[in-house]
Length: 490
Image (cartoon, rainbow, N blue to C red; front, side, top):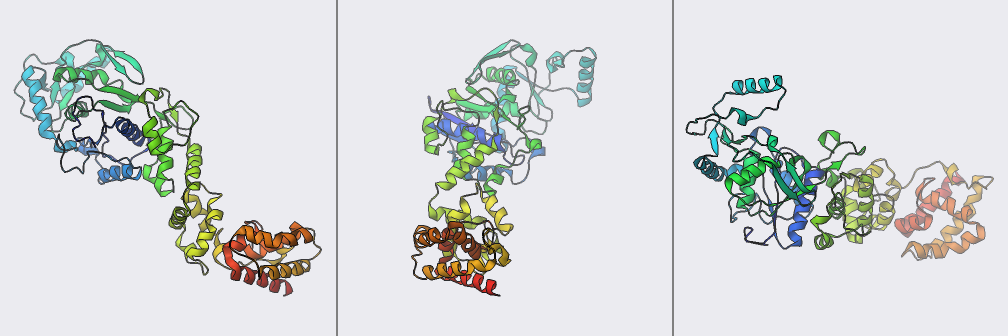
């Protein structure tokens, strides 16, 4: 960890959410890009909580933000839980003295003044501008004389210079905006809290932030920010505008109203952190190669802010499902067992023949057709795994092979399979197949394998009989074949 984020030439990034609700994809992607850029350059990543709008704060949001980042492995160097930092708290509501310090600097420079108007008077100014079909600018009503600011009224910036601003964005290139974007904006509200416009600039300066990554919605406000940088005499950081994440129809930025989920919902549904990080990294960033699967270490080594795309990025959840499947397949057998166990409902784990040993032998069968833990839970709740852990109940008519004239025809085949399996090696599905295959070739594959599979599963659709026998083990396999024969005999 870089213990001095203000050190010259050190890369410092930050993620600065407001505690106003759950963390969604867009916010987490911003945190990830900031994290990767800092780690790529052996720099510092800061988690800052911007909680100056107390009316919108949601209880528990700060803890939720931290839990979300920890799930994804995005460790911060300084954050709301840091006991000591070189710059004070990472929570804005605990930094009010710092904002007041800079506010008084601006007052002394003649670049800030108390707002002398009531809300009703300001509304009159707005209506007048609307009637004259011109934009409302507070600076058109700037008072010629001002009283001493005592904190009971909003403190406004006196724009230091009315001019056209030009700035460089790492992603968008050179951008500019005219004087119509500048106004005497509020710096400190009447409740004593700073506005976002003022507080984030001071915090970034104090914390030595070198690269600011944020959404394109902030481009329009950048001239206002630059006027505050100028008023305070602060050096500008690098601006890195991230592309919006688009909803399915590509017509609009994905938002909470469009179904954007809490990032921890993905965790609850069984998405692996490695898949989510990989997916988010490629949502708006292109490494310039055909590679699609990256470990976090790969991403840190490869990430380049110059390759962040300008165009909006589609939230392709089919790709996320595919990625999760790849990472799930690569889990060790032990980790797969833990994963599957966590998503099996209590009803399944309470079945008479459920055991860790049998579940372990079932892992491949359970995971081969699913991509998330939620799918495991849904399938299990539908009872589709019950035959693995409970003796099946079924109509014997489904034991009949399509070419047989009657159900009685399967009896000698099952009896012969039972005899072979008494001596078979049950160490794998392959050894079981080796034992039964000669009989299948003699009798006909369908003639033997269909009734044997149904006898073991009780279902018309299920894994092959060799896999089923391996999962069930010798005792249960033989018992189910005998039960099927007994049912046929009546």
